[in-house]
Length: 494
Ligand SMILES: [Zn+2]
Image 1 (spheres, rainbow, N blue to C red):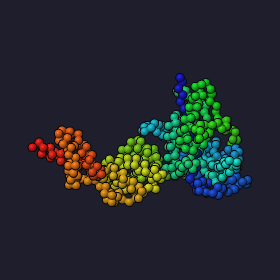
Image 2 (image 1 turned 90 degrees about the vertical axis):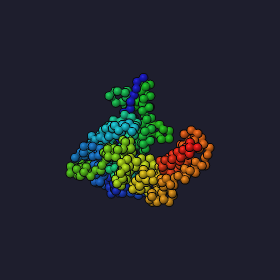
Image 3 (image 1 turned 60 degrees about the vertical axis):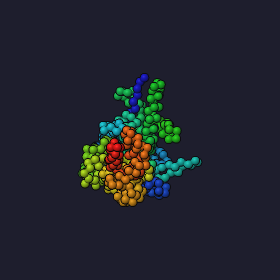
Image 4 (image 1 turned 30 degrees about the vertical axis):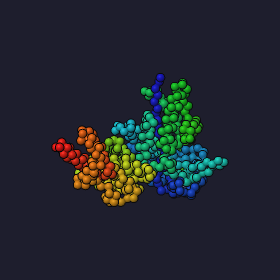
């Protein structure tokens, strides 16, 4: 049977976190809180005779993204009218960039397999600026339109069809989201629709260089929907080709309820939109000096941070990926390592990474909050991890302390003190417990003395239980061995 492989390209629409809209002074408002149509004016509702003005901040944000994606910046780019009629588009056209986009020919590196250190370079075809449309709210018998979103700056990032699996498509979209958040141009909040994906999907016989006929899946608003929809299309197209039927080029939507794609319209061509240069806006000139300033101000980006974390702190590719996906998490981790710098324990950066990515992440997820909203300061986490490392508390107690810190804040030392979680390390305090356990279990002791050596493990378990896990296991083991040796000698001397 012929084997088929998918070829996927993604178009990502990202709303930019500017104060005001793309071509007017209206505030960009949060759709969750704003009254419908409370942030609108003549320009963003498309009244005749009004003139748009380009938002400089939006251009700067677009430059940040384009430079971080290694694109070439066009000295001159042009805004165009993309004509189509839709109720959420009051002008009857959308101002976008077509022939001469702001930036082209970039790339981004993604992880190409789970946990693998190897990376794959995905080419970026273009990055351009446009404006968002309004929003339709459909009810049973009528529809409402909210123009608050109309004219919000929107960045479109188009990849080449370089993604060869659902996994890669997902990795690419995650990497882009991470990048946009690092650059502080987009919140990455998919539930609010500030980041939306469209996927071009085709399949072809494995090894073929030619592209198959593609379909375009519109408006995917979550990573889950993206993965499911792309997977569904790959399966659907593969089944068609296997049975000798052609794939029809069209636009499809993702039906979340039924988990299927549904045809929406036959694919429109670019000429259907009658693109024409926007007569109300001059060409956009971007000076080289400005581009240089924006480039110089870029933060360290996720990929660079990831490899630095691997070499500097000895983290695995996976751990470094987890800790650098979000800038606040990466900052938190570095602040923690910084405050651990006095410690002589060289594995502390690794231990902190473990506590952070498993235990603290677990608590954050459960509470559905971000790391910078947490009560656990990076410094407190380090002191907690150090206490576990130097044997002052057990790992199990460490988790209890972390939970208390997370809920109530405070210092790990006083939580250990208040709850009596410190390990019993000194022999003087452990020995009486050992003696008590041995005298409480005469039968087992007799068996042990008769040669059943494995029972010493069982005794150790009883001691840990009697101390509620607070005995330092090594110290308890030493005291137990000493006590058993004494008894053995007494017995054999009889
Ligand atoms: Zn406006």
